[in-house]
Image (cartoon, rainbow, N blue to C red):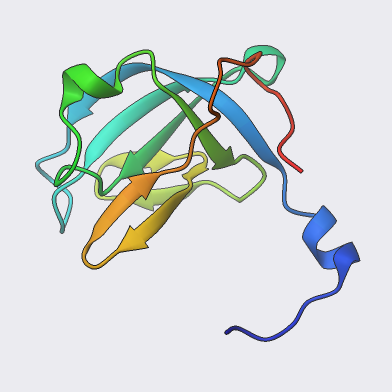
Length: 111
C-alpha cells in the first residue's frame, strides 16, 4: 500500500466521466498505446495517451465512457500532448479501464 494521504489531498484530484469520441493508433509511443479524444461535457474535449492496446480494439473504445483525472498538467508524450489521465486497474501487464455501469452525463464528478 502507498503512503496514507489526507482526505483534503484526495479532494484535490478531479476525477470525471467522459466519452471517447476518437481513437487513433500511436506508433511513436515507447509502449503500444492509443491516442484518445474524450468529451468531458462542460469541461470540453481533452486528449490522452493510453496503453490499453492489449485488451481493447479501437472500435470497442469509440463511444465508451471512462473515468479520468482532468486536473493534471499537460504531458508531452512523443509528438502528442496528453491533457488528462485515463484511469484503469492494472491486471498483470494489462490495464482494464474504469467506467460507470450505466451511462452518465459527460463531465460527471467521480467521488
